[in-house]
Image 1 (tube, rainbow, N blue to C red):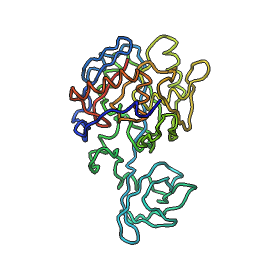
Image 2 (image 1 turned 180 degrees about the vertical axis):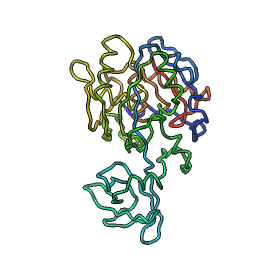
Image 3 (image 1 turned 120 degrees about the vertical axis):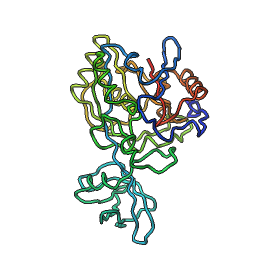
Image 4 (image 1 turned 120 degrees about the horizontal axis):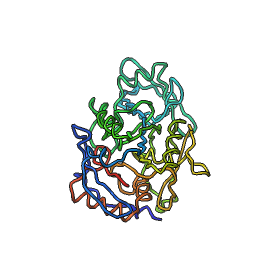
Length: 334
C-alpha cells in the first residue's frame, strides 16, 4: 500500500491555529461505519451519543514545556527540544549543529551541556531540571501551527485530566473534554479509565517511504494499569463498547492484547504501526481529530473505518467548515 493513498489537499486556512474559548464547543462529525453514514453534531453532544455502560478510555499523559531557548558561548540564539528524560538531571534532546560539551546558557542562570549519546544527544540540566523546565520552557506546538507558543498554550495544549508528565505533544482528541463533561458522562453511566502514552517526536515524523511498509515507527512509552486492563476485558465480555479517546489510546490498548484477546497490564515502549488490514481486538469506537495528509494517524483511522470512507469524510469536513489538526474539531467513529 502506497503512502500516496493517504494523501489529500489541506488548505492552510482549514488548520486551527488557536483553540476555541470553550473546549467542548468544537464540532463533532459522527461516522457510522456499518451504515456508512455521516452526521454533524457538537462535541458537547457526546454524552447523549454514548450509552450507559460504555467504557471511555483516556490518555492521562501530561505535555511538558519542552522547548528551551538559550544562547551558545558565541552569543547565538539556540533552541533545545527535549524529547525524553534520561535521568533526573539529563534529557534526550534535539538541537541544531550540536557539539560535544557545548554549553548553552538558559534563563535563571542555568547552563546546559550537550553530551553525545550514541547517535543522539543529551543535555545536562542539573538536579532541579523539572522545576526549571516548567518555569522557562515553552509548549512544543506542532510545526504546522505557525506561531510562537504563549502562556495560554500551557493551559489549552493540555487535557484537563493530564497527570503524568512526559509527552512532547498533546493527545489532541482529549483536548475537547471539560471537567463538567466528564462528570456528565459519569452521571450518564459511562465508565472512565486511563492509560498513559507519552507522545513523542514520532508524531511529527513524516512518512517519507513510498510504500507504507517501509516506514519505521518511533517507539513511545506506554502504561496500562491493572484496573484499566480489567475494565476493558470485563466490558468486552459483557458486550459493552470500549471507546478510545484518541489514536494514542488505540495504539496503547491494541499493542497489549494477548492470544486470548485480553488486554494485559503493561509498562514499556511500543512502536506499533496500525494501517489498513490491521485486526482490532480491544477497541469498538474511536474519538479522534482530523489528521495531516500522509500521516500514520490518518492510516490508523483509515484502518479502523475504511480509507475511502475516511477520505470522503475529510472532504465533507473541509466543505462544511470544520477546523483541522491539533486545535481543530473531532470525529466520533462508531
